[in-house]
Amino acid sequence: LTEAAERFALIAAHPVARTRRCPTEPAPAPDHAAPDHAAPESAAPESAAPESAAPENAVSEDGTPVDPFPTRRLRARPKKPLRLLPRGYGWLVRMGPDLVPYGIELAYFLAQPDMAELLATAPRLWNVLRPICRMFGITPPETLPLPPPRPARRATAARPDPVRMLRLSDAAAAREYGPQGYRPPLFGR
Image (cartoon, rainbow, N blue to C red; front, side):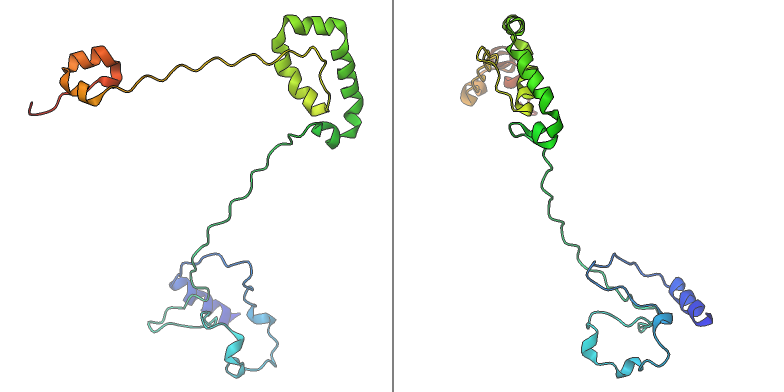
């Protein structure tokens, strides 16, 4: 116990920056685990320990303990693939077969004439019902309206001609081209 206290005092007096060990590198065995009748370390073959690893009690020239686990370059971790939610046709029924009766009820409900009338008057309801039908693996009724068309994108503004902009004054360029044509005043004009 005294020997361990002396070693701890020596190590605590000269702290060494440590890094995490690689998971493949074995942890050092504690001193008390070695049997008393074990052969001395000098008798062990040199090929048993890697050259880069220092012995546990190694001390450098200036008397400070040598780090037995030298710092290593950390490799960048490979990116994990994103966990995507299920998307396939009928994925909910495949995950929970006990949900099949609810899908059948939904299909029956959508086939009713009153529901077809409601969906014809409010086609936005299909934006909610389409994904639910897909989750249950239900083919919607034949009277399914197409999704509402997306609004057309505005045409991009034409880029101002740089040569013409140079000929215009700042006020004229701002008036003609708007904020994109604004040029801050140049120094030394």
